Length: 164
Length: 396
Image (cartoon, rainbow over all chains, first blue to last red; front, side, top):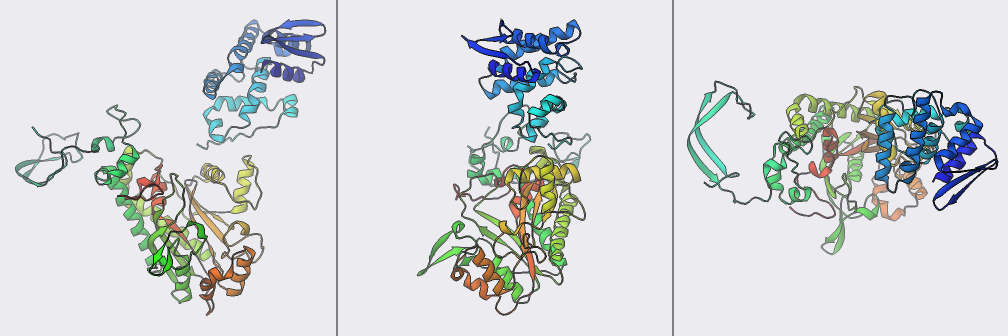
């Protein structure tokens, strides 16, 4: 899961020559000669090389990004059942209740990573599920409008009227 | 001290006005001071289910107990289960639906007819009929009074309706199918356009809903106490959308489907939700279905053979009536039967009934239990059938 998300993030950031490999359950990112171990560090390396804006402006934001990336690497990517995935989704839903994006009010790399991870699930949701996770739907709908994401991923329909 | 919970007793007593209101009873102002009590009919001591438990609301019980009586237990001991106030209310309301149906049609000049249920050949779709020995030959239980309604129209009755049991041998164990239910069917000859029939049916429904809302409010409240549900909303005149418009609504919501494709059950439910969100009504009519998905006796649209003069009506997103203008010309009927690859000899008597002239007519049929279930917002049709019949249940 980490390998796939790293590759998708690399494509999003247009990093170019990146090699991601697995070694004993640890993911190694190799870019421009440098080898980095671990998902969080690999993502941050790519971001700092390519698009510093997505790394966060304030120290608090940088902290929150690292927190979210760690949450992804420990919990979100390793959900064995749908029940655990629902627990993660409820946590994300609660966090999004008071912010536009995961770490505040601007888009950053944590949002992109969580979007890439959740996209295959949310595109199969029924309208009832989208209404149950209202905040995630709102955040996802805003994420879809980003140019590079819009080009690569088919848009998911959301209903603006409450159906259930 | 022995407890006699379910004996039928006769009480001779004095009725007295109380000083304070008695909050725990339904009659709060008066008390009875009994002078003589007679046991008219005694009951067994051990009961298979407690009436108190059977009438407890499943969620948000004021006493906080999470006791539920299983549906099978209820249906096996139906006599006890029917004593709960909720069930008394449900079946009085169901009687109200039947009464309002009769009144609404009688006032519009309809005649009630009685149709036979023992028939010699399976009318529509031979797979779902119950068969039996009838002296030396085979007979079937009628799947719908369709043929006889139409014969009554050909017999110059003009407008007819019939209320009687309908038998469907479908092996579906769902929350909304029974093998035997009460069908309220109507058929009328019209003068200019089949929409005359659609308007009659639509206005009849509006009258039924209004009558239930105004005259059976206590019963609805009693049912909602145990089974909470949103009140039923409807428009006057009823909302009528074309099938094309329904498909357009679904496409806007992201469902991929062809314009002439039949609606699957999840799509029907979603369309019900979208119509509720847009028009604020739980009841609507979908007109002009595609010809390909309707039975062979449906009249095609004269302006465009892709569509047909047929309609469905929905309550809370579930279909309750499927109706159409019927083909009243024998030659056209044979042609359509051939197009559906139905052997003509199995429907010869049906075609013969139109041989001596028949006015153009349209109609439809509803299931009494399903309408009651959807009006009250219940989740299972067995709650609205007094002694339900399904593939697994034949008693009581």
